[in-house]
Length: 209
Image 1 (cartoon, rainbow, N blue to C red):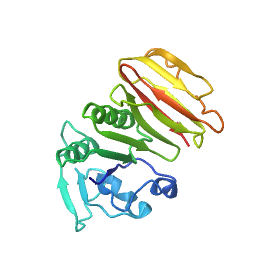
Image 2: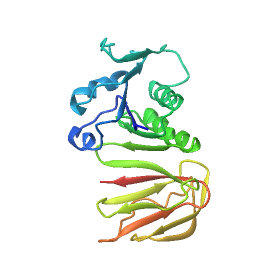
Image 3: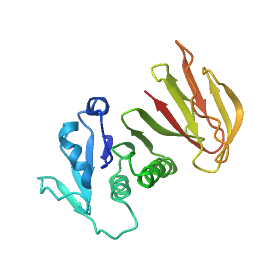
Image 4: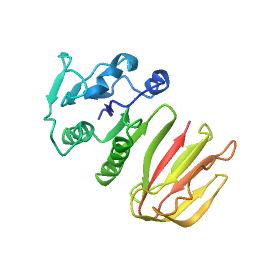
């Protein structure tokens, strides 16, 4: 199954870095004003979705789903649901975090939705990569020392059995709540790989390049 890449309308400053994460066989969904990134990313859409309230429908020779302006789902959430309906299991989201904090938080929550569905989801921006580490993973998440920092942020309930090894600030069977975020700005030990696992619950792993 091809990976599904969903492109939103938030700013992308480093097209080279973001574009390097794309694969030739990715299935590309552009959401509304995410189409402004098409030339920078150098990839054509397989599917376009949007209500076109922030970008004119370019009329490209690609499948296009036109949405109403008044709806429960954002264009990005609709795109994810449509891709799930089409059977995709691996998702990369770009151009979905940035100036609008409300959209950023809403889009980060998409990772929780994908984790609940048993799917793999990653968000990347100019500086970082984000994914969910949960008790569904079955094995530790590996972080190599090419990342300057990494953080574990609780965005859903309470995470227990949190273990970090191979890092400057290790943890063993710890608990992280939404009220006390002490998992911010850790570092992989030089020449090592860090391992992160969660026994119960979910955490947002942010790896800073």
